[in-house]
Length: 255
Ligand SMILES: NC(=O)c1ccc[n+]([C@@H]2O[C@H](COP(=O)([O-])OP(=O)(O)OC[C@H]3O[C@@H](n4cnc5c(N)ncnc54)[C@H](O)[C@@H]3O)[C@@H](O)[C@H]2O)c1
Image (cartoon, rainbow, N blue to C red; front, side):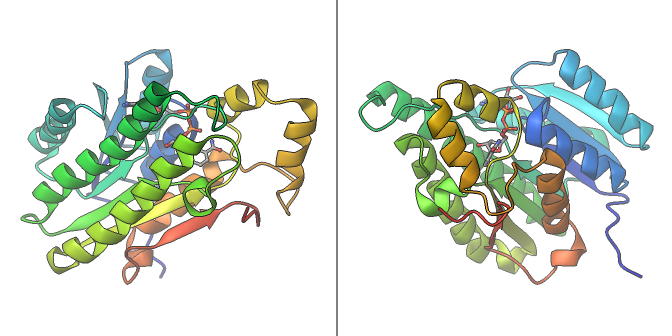
């Protein structure tokens, strides 16, 4: 029998009220996780409705507001999960932002903001989840990279750099944490239809938009659920001998 069940497991997904994070959180609930922490900057109607949907699968859900680039907020969230369920098995560091300014349009403060939020949140989430997991039977950490972290991307210099940093962090942490039974992998999605992409596309000319779409060999954007399935693969025992990997989910796009 193929085992993709997360029964008895506790999972945290950051930046999960909307978009890819939401799809990942629901996928973990569908895979029967026992406890699910849904984090986002604020707990709004999106987070509340996600809680209801996840509970319908039988998961117990904790909503935790917090900026994942803030060290105290990350520690507090992990403590809340451990206090409630006495364990933490899967940490999905999904929270992230993007800007769509090109090299000349990117200011130093844009750079600092994108690098800070994206890389710092993955670093802090990895560090503090692993600090707990290493003394409690191991676990799986899934970091949100991007195809832009492999190719440099085509829109802005800061975003691809931040995601390349996350992929390097993933490779380092995979080696460092393997002796503790902790696997660390990254997802590298291409263009996935979420608010982030809608916002980016708003700033593009029709021609640039067409160029972005025609660069996808499968001829369409991805659905958040298609990324969530890959997250479940890395979170579950199906990937028991895979660590330090970055999985492209791009419909064939490699530019
Ligand atoms: N959509 C894509 O095409 C695509 C492609 C590759 C990678 N990604 C990555 O996937 C992740 C999710 O992207 P999305 O498209 O769902 O974006 P989104 O903007 O739709 O959702 C991101 C969520 O993260 C939250 N968030 C932002 N900063 C946060 C912080 N500091 N702390 C906690 N939560 C925070 C937001 O409030 C939002 O709910 C991001 O890391 C993004 O870089 C997206």
